[in-house]
Image 1: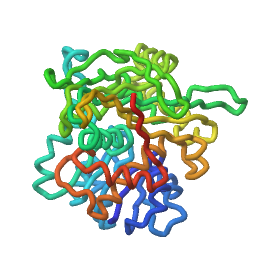
Image 2 (image 1 turned 45 degrees about the vertical axis):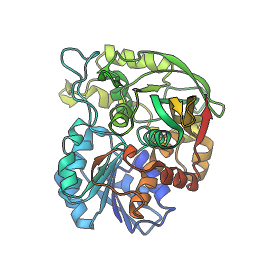
Image 3 (image 1 turned 30 degrees about the vertical axis):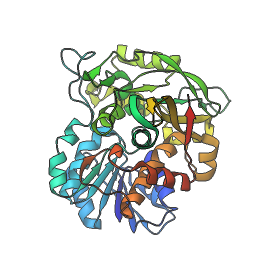
Image 4 (image 1 turned 45 degrees about the horizontal axis):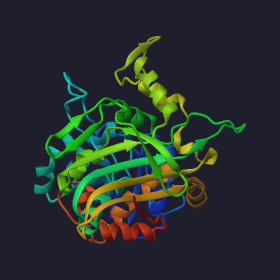
Length: 403
């Protein structure tokens, strides 16, 4: 297996650090628009080489794949670049993985009632083409989406006879401080992506209605997260799980709620009111800039906040329905990572590490032939048990709690 890793910062850097401890691949080409960043991520392992790439150019991705004989493209850049990387991999005859699907566009007339272009629609439109070519595009294989979708498959196969709701719930008690020990606002993940998913109309799926939307931050609920994190208020957010799970798992309802917190929600609302969430460029003193790019640029790089971060992050799936024994069941399947542990063991903060470990596990399953498939597929299309077993073997065990 020869892997092209597109994106060397944040999750990409953590991916490289995790993969370096495994032996299932021949080479990883770490590519980024910033060659120095790629060189840092590739340092210290002769199986890794660095390269420069323009992720907005499918042709550039294809050329790099052909130059290095790439078999699998791992997309670790912001989802705005999904389609060029996706198309570039296909043109090169390589398989493809990502952690966030192609972007949505709200319904032009009823954005908080009906879906427009949904997350992943552009990729699923090419599913027949990928299948006919015998190539695999494994989409949404981070932690959320990704591990949460593996949990959905596991619950359907091993825990439940009927599922009422697949409810992804994400929360944390992370705190970032400045040099003086004062708490500061510093998102633990890409601010560009956070704005996109939190301010777009959230999507919900129901068997009788299909996919529909609600206003941002709707249906707040307090969810009690495990391993000391405790109660966190969660709200509806647009996320890939809702677009993936119903395609492969039989259930009545699918939701995604994120524990943002009052301060974060207020900041997002202010950004929207001021138009600073816009991606369309504006002219400032003769220079064209995207307001959202400016916001992302002035905040701390999530990849750098680890040394000043404390706490844990939890990704998980709350499943309700009827158990295999015929009795009502409510189970939370989850994965918790402590920032102190991930910084000590890997030098990467817990949110990016937790995201990055899952595609490494998936690639190892593909390399060994345990997972096989063709077309555009989500994690739900594969057997969950080998994934969960290997994730535990990586030193990242998952948990299960009856609610």
